[in-house]
Image (cartoon, rainbow, N blue to C red; front, top):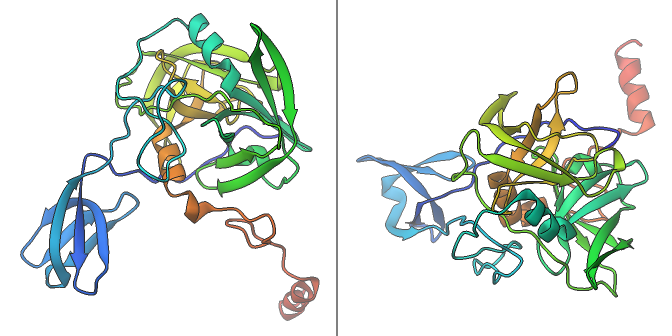
Length: 321
């Protein structure tokens, strides 16, 4: 976003691999990955925390394979069948292509997000118009518009959508889920998501966004590191140029899959851009009910209101101010 590019967030890692369902004696259940089984306790990784469950409270343990966050190619892939996910997957990873080919193919699904206070970028998840951007791009705003470039007759047609709803927000992960709700909106082109497991340091990546308002700007670089720690949080670091206005846009691998959400840079250096790992996007989307936003509710998550004036005056008086 033009007015702010840097935001910090809390990492909540999703489960992967094998998962177990622990059915408890009170008819409740816990799903996670068992880290240790002792004579008196079972230690379970829930993804966001580790829980120790007394064995005498467990009725039985059912082992199953957790849904994999497989690589995806959304443009032609069927939707994910895991129920509540908004993104697409494919059974086979797409082949690598050049940046020129991928930018032409995926650019239609990368959008510009505008608010009265500034602008940022975003990318569309499915044909219904759900899209991801950074929380700090729309923070404190409700009047949001999205600029989309549709492919029509071999040319690009720019269109602005004004009916945009905030569906979910996570301030600490710097993520927001928006929904385009214009009545005459067409089926939208969308981008695939992937995980970062297949990425290695030195692999080529590229970003598409609107740095300084210059929409559809493509920057290329490499993955500098997958584990850059900043204030206890891990980021993807890349040499692909990231500037204000890129915030919320996608960072792609060379198969055209989103592996991160660009959200900040070090302003006094060059080639020091950072992105939120896509695994955090998976978690945010899969648990979006917990982050649901209600435009009519002034007590939405992580939005703290100023105390009433009388309370402030009373507190000052008691403090002798």
